[in-house]
Image (cartoon, rainbow, N blue to C red; front, side):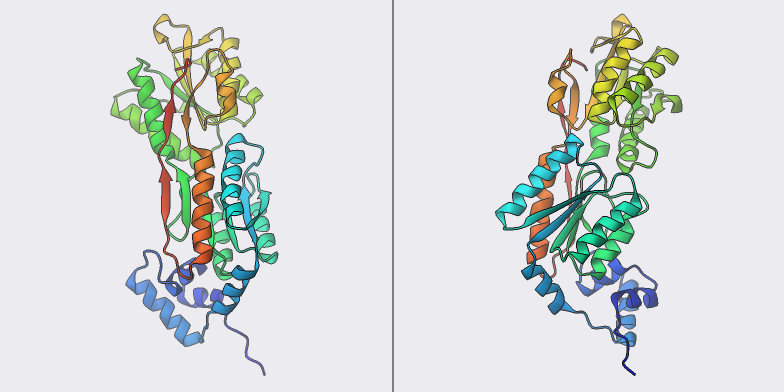
Length: 340
């Protein structure tokens, strides 16, 4: 009888670790404990696993396709990431294979699986709770270089290029406090958002640092549309009229908040002392921010730079045989306009 070929998944199961951990041990990458390395090496020896480097090198040298899976390609933030990422790939002779997964972990896994079947040379993707580790394991098993891009940090098994969401929220909140605001709310995003969790962490930490109150009812989820944001902000200000400033999770949230403030018989502006104005700060600056009256203040997450850095890193990984894992966290910039 012909013996079944041992796969990397067999090694992972035998050693009691993830596929990505086995891949890191094979490549001598990442921060892996000596005990884990010993377990993996023992499993490799016991099972007789042989890594198919030739197949991985052949795939990378022949394919000019590179996959990019984003949450929402119509979102201006992700559009800029795509532009920056694609620009770098084109310089190196690669073609972009673009897909979107929404909020569905299953959709993310299917998109990546399809890209693997198409023989891509590398994949960049945005993380989702409940799917990121499975995707990392899938790509490691296929020996396809990968980079996690955009919204939030993940684990130490994979390279990532992300904005510093916590620092962005800290700086935005600190700016509002220094402007005299003492009742600051956070609007937008969903409870399962990694990005939202990081930003709320920075927001709450800064309020505590200044000895200021924050209440659960001032941290409000809402859908990503301007209409949903307008309705949410109107209700929030009507129920809690002491609020004088709002951090807005997405560009659409900030743009919709302008209407919500007006519906609550308040005006958008930075002067909180007259009791009528509400300061707004959004995240991920967009061109439309300059068209409102007054223009909206934003924390810029340099989306195009995120795409460019992710593209450069993935190209390096596709060309290098055993690159080390790298983490790139980009600092935010506060763009002050008339709304805060």
